Length: 370
Image (cartoon, rainbow, N blue to C red; front, top):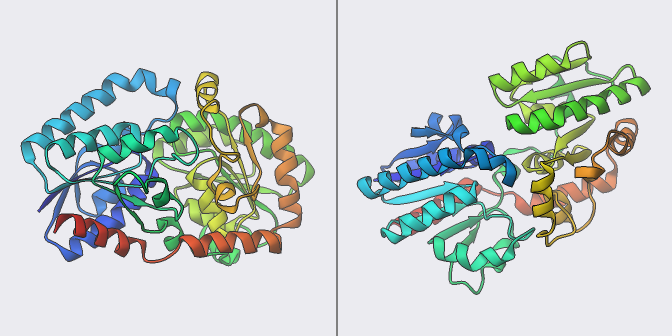
């Protein structure tokens, strides 16, 4: 049985890889499509590298539209010619959902993992999404209800991050693994996994680090780089600071940290699931922000805050993401550490989302196929 797959971001690669491995344990299958390194390691043949799709923001995507449309056309040709048993996609909904709709029109079951963030903005997409898919695997418990009246088969599978991340691990183990000092404050700095994000956010985050360093000369920063290219980019900007750049290992960095400063996104959920005090900050193209802001349907932007129904972590977006505002938000976390109230709320989120996610997902996929 041949299955076509497509992931558009690092998180999609991380989520799909173990699910595909579990499916292959229960059925004789081969996978091919748009894949990242973890999916390739799990046996997926890459028709296109995933990083060709990794772009975020309305204005940012405009120069890439011809290339993205070309890749999607080629994927459609592949689906029509090879007629796989299913198409399984994850993340990148603007690219993947039209591809799913095309597969569905060919009679190929279309399964998407991770619902688009319709809870946050553009809820009017729900009926259209339901028509584009045969099955949707949701990572948050409130999501299936959003599609309740559409006829789309939705499964809550739990969040792979909660299944993979140990809650509140001993920081000493992570510090030892990263060869960091066993005492003293450590700031985890995660400016994003995309090149454009890093170029926009890293200078701001380093300004914050410099201000914090003035207050506490013992502070050490640690930055995980998502790729070799980003490692070189980050190292060139960090020069002269007591700031380590490591290849990948973002979860180890979070576990080792006293507090974490990061780009708003999946990393914010990872940090909270690790039980670390966190500040999320983000800046995007001003035109993109103006277009997105008017369509937001929730008070909170970050997932931890939405799940907690309160401002569990500071979220500083666009004009609010200033050096002073970020310093003011993260300085108490570095000095006082994690509070019992934060830990209790973070633990509650972890328990809600955890479970054998890969088993649930593989069962839902095989149920659709067999």
